[in-house]
Image 1: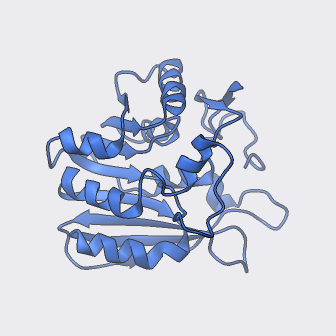
Image 2 (image 1 turned 45 degrees about the horizontal axis):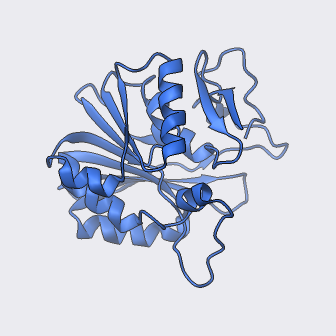
Length: 249
């Protein structure tokens, strides 16, 4: 069933979701708040854009043109409706295509920034795949692998362009190795913890195409207090309106 919700804590922005499909999570809020944006950024690509959560949040932070590519038709349709509802057609373009095909037909060195909240889990004999095809594609490397994402970024980023990913900490060494194999130098990392005294469950990482060596480890981000409310640090990520965001995710 299709529903229209407020985009977590962002005043006057709403997002279409389908209750039978993969819903956006905190990962999609963290990534656009982590990626480095400056006035020279003119073109951004979001790979596997889903219902366009990341492009919509990015539109509050930059005037750059944003392209989102989404392989799943239902997600693409939700993204288009969300863009139209928020009247962002002039800034955000959504393309229904396999990103691997899009990368083949797109000229090299096109984008200043690429963002991606990719499928986290490898597909193997012990993989527990989700029930629906939509959820399986969103969570597991069925159509798109980590290596695919980074190779696509290598082609489509301008020299010194930025790739920003959100992933799971257990995949960090894979990310670092594949980045360096593709001339994307890791530049900053932030570990995200659900609460104090818990293991990190999210890692944010940014790299620069043909960038110089030099990796910065940012201060840890704790998302929730012991009572389940968002921390003060986390609440700074939200554009607060009249919406209570303390326990929405």
